[in-house]
Image 1: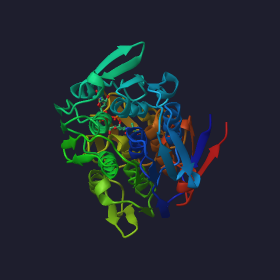
Image 2 (image 1 turned 90 degrees about the vertical axis):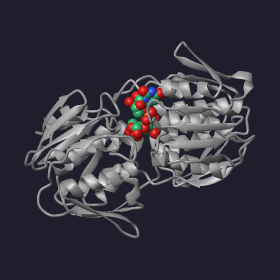
Image 3 (image 1 turned 45 degrees about the vertical axis):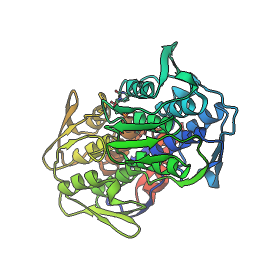
Length: 422
Ligand code: EPZ
């Protein structure tokens, strides 16, 4: 397994292009199953998760071609469609469960392996199941697979309220509802920009959807969907991650394609901590306001609140802030695995359940650390960039799932970073 070596190298300056959103692309790709006409996605990120979704869709009988080195994905599912999503692929990536709604809507039945838990939590699918059952699906769990069938062969529109504003459940239900008979209303729907992006793409395919981005989404089912060409929205989590580079090391960095509305809550926290974020024509410009970073408290929430996917990275910044910060992780039950690794670098962190208390220190010290999940891995790189001496982050396959060309992008702003091949 590869590792990444980083060495504190002072202030970082320059420009970083931000890619298309992994979590938008992973829900846009399964939408091809809803139509027999071609779906073209532009601004697609080059990531191993995208390769996994490609493999899954191909196993279901869809055609997926990566053009222009993978920045453009040409998808089509003329059929016949295999309606079984195999454990061997699904276990690699939870987002594989996003084929459930489209398969049910297109084929009237689906057999999808439960993804199994992952490092950050159990990640059940009860909200997906209840939502699809409300649309008239009969779903049974057998041998680790969800066996789903649309009663009478076709889903029917329904009103529903999600117990939690689940991103994946909202996406699965929305996609299934586009071809259901009648009207569907999803109350307490997730409001993430990736949901808005999916709705906009489905609308281009002929779906009748309104309210995306709010807590109430209404979908009028149609008989069939056509093809579309859609540009994947900018990745707000990659954007937020690289905004932290000048915050932690000093200097000034411009993130191309960055839009303030994608990271408003995060940018507000950075402002409180002493980091200025300004919108330019080309993107977001980030630099320290001067002096040491100040401690701030953070609570993760569904969008538009502070994103859980930026919590680990923010903790890396707060490890050397002046004062004590309290971080509350409200979305996942086990998302502080980066804390013990940061302790190895001299951070002062106490974790009790879903709360981490971080007492800022002057400087972190480089150390050998281990990546445990996608976002924890990049928080260790950020910490290493500001630490005295060298840091080696092992198990960087986590990193490649969600950050394209990560060494190149960090090197582009003057970071000392290299990959050590296993
Ligand atoms: C999406 O996961 C993202 N993944 C996650 O990003 C992100 O952290 C998460 O949304 C929250 O924003 C993709 O979009 C591919 P949820 P998802 O359903 O849809 C519980 C990353 O780093 N829950 O909103 O799985 C669940 O256990 C990844 O890019 C149920 O209890 O998230 C969690 O505690 C990590 N039952 C909470 O809800 C369900 O049926 C939020 O989950 C579904 C979810």
